Length: 524
Image (tube, one colour):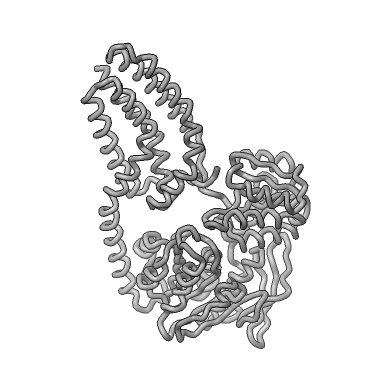
């Protein structure tokens, strides 16, 4: 009976570590290579957290060496029960930036993890030796992190078949919409905002569907088509993300857009692409794989795009603020209500106003305008769309929270966007506060980019609050090197702690910039 009770208790003790392991696997996009890299980067912190329970288990194990197996079982039961209670209570109090999403895929993974865990524990229990009892206890605490590997290998064929079935169905639906105007958007950054802006403008004249949120992966796009695309839609604006060589090529064959836009190219996902050259070539597949009668839109302010020679006869248009282009803007004026600016296209000069903020959003609007004019949408319709469009969530979004004015730029910060966010902050009244955990997924350049980010804060911010002592070390170094007053720099472990400080040091007259919001897997 005690053996069965012990078996149940160690199963309960494994629930929280199992959830954490699946959570991190999900945040690493279900990729074993990314998960392994994350484990490698975080193993030191995990070891520190595990050292106390590991020492307790080891000490008690040595103390029980002379006891019978039955007495060892009793001690193990007590420790396992205490461990289970502590883990569950701690989990009930935990908060997550991006909680685990219990998708069908995760549910299948949970079942396989549970079966693997039960088989291992049952084998150890069946042997019923003194060492095996301690091994069962250790497996409940550490085992789930290792079981991710066999689970991923076992479920991979199933997930592949499921996904391929969904993709086939999405392709069938697209074939049935033969008059649908398909627009693809990609870029290292700016693509989601540009997609939303483009959708707002085009929707003034056409029934338009855009991929929601950041649904830019094959399965996110597939879900959009299967669940949201209807016969009434005339235009489909599809955001296409890429983390590896071949991703854009695959999506272009899948969606077959006739219009494509590249908003930017930079070092984002450099660690998975391998080189900047690979990133540039892959992103530019958006233009080079368009049909000959298609239309491409390119950001001429981006060095990598401007210097690239397109290997396709497709017609293109460019937009920029600081370089010659087909669509440019001037007389940009900021206010707490948004921006006013003048679009310049050939001999035309059109004054627009919007609730959005920042030069980056002017560029995004210019990209959308280039597509709209290609589709022969009038300037009056464009003006109305630009004026009425809502602020894009978490992208230089002005928000009043508890009497404080925030500029929420919390989504997936990048080098260009963070620089523009600081420029916007510098134009705001009152005390200017930056809250940031820094930028990630920038490969070998990550530290230098974050160091430069820290240096740029001098003269643009009055207070800096860094979230996560480990990943913000380069920012701290950049602040010091720039001569920033370090008495006005604070480092905290959690976003909640940062907000507590913000409300202590600011009033309703001040402005707080929230720059990036790392998922739990990277916030350390």
